Length: 106
Image (tube, rainbow, N blue to C red):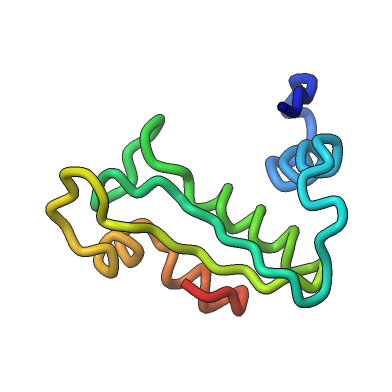
């Protein structure tokens, strides 16, 4: 288990998120060629605050590891009672555009 102190939002969300990742030592030894899988929790076909992961968060985390040379994949499965297309959900959430822009697999 990793415990990270709460940080204020005096800095940008990107700076805050990257600082939390660094402080928590998540991926401390990951680097060039290592594979990272980010699962955004798309339990709804469109963004739903407090339920689905915000696309800007996924983008910041993906960029953090891409900048370290990791190979990032953003993926999701249609488990549970999902009655919608994951491809359409990725598009509706903006993840397809983010993955393309960053060079991540999505």
